[in-house]
Image 1 (tube, rainbow, N blue to C red):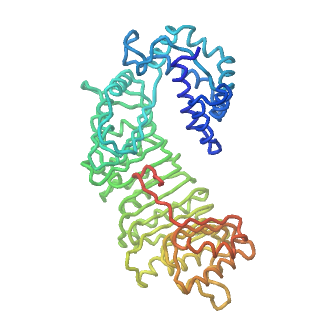
Image 2: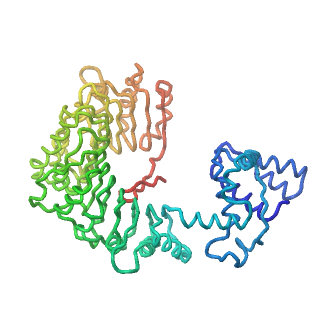
Image 3: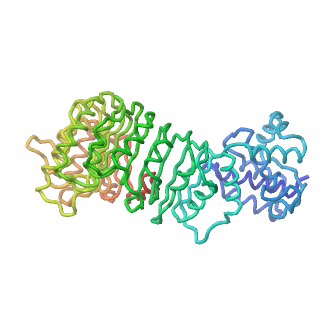
Length: 560
């Protein structure tokens, strides 16, 4: 007989179905059927069968899903005693019968007796074994709170559960991301031992990202815990850190280290010796990310020794130009890596002669480079003229980006043109740029092997689009291998629109250009472009407004 609990289970299954349901599902039809069932119109059995068929789970999950759902329905929450009060919002105890809304789930339940025998044959056995399993198994503590709540949540049960698990060393991962002041500070407090002394914990991964300007104090958390199993450490935000020397014995097995400590943090930046000690104690590092105050500013002799990191594959360094590249020069990498990103926060020309050789020497050694190189300057890089030579090996992608000053002048062209004199001849590459037109022309002239070009937020000037004396457009002369073109928020003057159309027509006439994407900027002219060349490329896409990206610290992006 169907009871209140069968409906509760049905709601759970329906909720899962709503999450996994693909766009092909006919939601309106389901709603119409539910209205007919509610009003008692027609053959109710047939209506319900049709409705249940549409609610069928599209993804064939493992049978353990059923066990988990039944357990959540059958077993009362641990905050209530086994003999206390009603179950789940007033539902009567012992009213347990289930209606499986699809035939597949019935087959799963009937053909996997070994799962059900583990849980027992009576409600008492289910309670006992579920209670034991929940308390004994290690868990991952993960919170990604991107919303802003007007009032704090009911943290009582959560606090008791976290403190209980932490006290019995049953937490393996602590990943907390929040855009509001709570609950990360509270959770850190619950995870920190109340007693004096240092306690051992088997936490393997810590990722703390606090996106508010209020200081998050994690000094006691690290001071009172010994973390010999820690393999991944990511810290981001305004943080009060423990002593940098304290992290050396705490971190010996790290494969991932990301430190993005905001400059307004009440934390003393590490000295070069302290940072190198941390890196030296983790020779198995594969992913290294250091930003802001995590990169030492001191100029002592501590940077002299090389730090051997034979497994390093990804590097992200963001700080002052001189300390960033000086630190990079002290890292001894393997012959291959997947990704390298250097972001400079300033541009001091007097630093170039000292730091440039470090980057050139490494790129000369990295003959097996397969990943992406990205060098970005947040301010105009007058002195940031790194010449990447053809010795770079098998480099496939390059991403260079600067943000020129608002008032651009011709006197700034030459420094930018010297920013890079590289592309391995005959090698396929991707180039992303927001350089002004004259700089763009000079850079692309040195890059005949570019297959993919992405241009962001520039005005293509008359000189870049008009025919040259040889009867070819400058762009086609510079980019004989161009296959994919992406223009985002790019504009041209009215008189130059015809030149741009002619250039695009030339690039597509022989089938060389196979992909054209326009977003923002010129997008209002897309119908005209589509009419002339839309059918000549394999991929043609237009969007009127550029996508808005809202960075959330170093740790990711939220796309709206």
